[in-house]
Length: 253
Image (tube, rainbow, N blue to C red; front, side, top):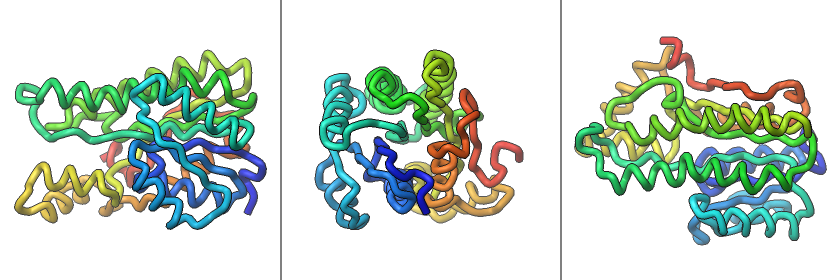
């Protein structure tokens, strides 16, 4: 399979569940991949698991402009170009009502989930190859509200606006920009949210989320990666400025 043959992809949040599954799929389709993350130990572990000579990593905090510049330059030096940008890094924050939400936690979520996406677009897009593809990870929380997740919901709504503007500003170079909107996925993030909501009985929280999904289960990270691959490949070369929902019908329900 070579849908991404000779392509270079940058993946932020590269050591997370969705990032790792996407890297694995991109590599299988012929791409060279640069993983971006804040923790070198996690990135090294991911490289070991992927076990592929075409995957590399760069330690960077996406909420800092200088770190975005660093990983862009590092990718260009080591891999020569950037064709695909999976702007994927994100955190969930704490689960509390708006009236009780700590300002410091709000700032942390916005810095990574919203400012990080903005900075990624600001520094990657000018260096991307014409005809490239940017995929931004939003969420079903970018399309509807969830009690207790005010900062996360705000950030995931916000990245849709960034996507729309970036799609317009880069259409003259045939660079496509789209968002993906996963529902609950079997990753660390959902384990954390389940525990935050009910430390004593997270399994019941999971059942509650599943009951809100018409397909009655969480997604696997590979299922999110499959959509990302489509948007990264030339199969989507006439698609930009759009939102792609992969949530088992959660928003429709």
